Amino acid sequence: MNFLNHYIYYIGAFGLIFIGLYIVLAKRNLIKVIIGLSIMDTGVNLFLISLGYIRKGTAPIFSQPGLDPKRMVDPVPQALVLTAIVIGVAVLALALSLAIRLYGHYGTLNLRKIKEQRW
Amino acid sequence: MRTVISLILLLVIAVGISLSLAKIPFGVPKTKVGRYYIDKGIKQTGATNIVTSVVVNYRGFDTLGEVTVLFIAATGLGAVFATGKRKERGKVESASLVLTTGCRFLFPFILLLGAYIFIHGHLTPGGGFQGGAIIASAFLLIYLGCRGRRINEQTAKITESLAGLLFVIVGLLGLTAGGYFLMNFLPFGTPNTLFSAGIIPIIYIAIGLKVGSELAGVIDNLMEKS
Image (cartoon, rainbow over all chains, first blue to last red; front, side, top):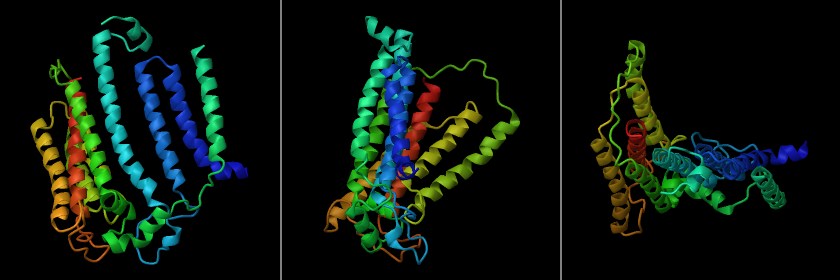
């Protein structure tokens, strides 16, 4: 129980990363591979945020007087993840648009069949 | 076969990562740089939201690079669909009056919320990226709810370019004011008021407009040309 209490966030984040990695390695449908990449992205973001967490910490915002700076969580991972989420959305859209084009060209989303076909 | 191999590979990676992660304690302060930003942040940048001061001030150049990555992704998506013709919608059954009126009623309020989020980025949780995403969601609502209405692509592109230009110009003004690129040359004002923190609100407004118009353009491309 103590182990879970200490590392539950790491376990959850890497669980998501491994689920995504498994999808990327094992599935052949291109849409599923893109979904796997997106899940991996979420897991990495979660891991970065959990690295910066401090037990019983507050958000690093001095919104009212009397907040203790010593109890605030690390702002640097939050700043990294904030931009990474939006970039993840844009890259996901780019990947999906390429998938749409591939489907229009080959008529299939199965990666093995696409590899067999000639241009 | 493929499944078994990938599972074995995952197991090997998981063991390696868990061995190295076991030495990293959870929930205790790890870095000194974050502590430095929290201690000195208000005095050096004037923003009460320390995350904002890290994103826009301490690592502003980094954020310019990230905005560029976003721009390249949106432009790439536009290039992929550049040859695609605008879809001829056949007989699309028009939505009910309740749906269209509701969407048109909600649209300005969602835009207002997005603008509020990015204007108050240096005071409250949120900022340019989040506010821009909210603005794009308002356009998505219009695309889904009111068929036939769409954004003007040219306007979105011009807004995006001007916002990106504003970011760079504010950075260059810092350079000419006798400092370095993206120097905070405006007066800080009193913390916890709207007009404080120097150039941070200006840059976050630029980022918000840029992200909002870019994501709206992405939505337009995906909905109309795919």
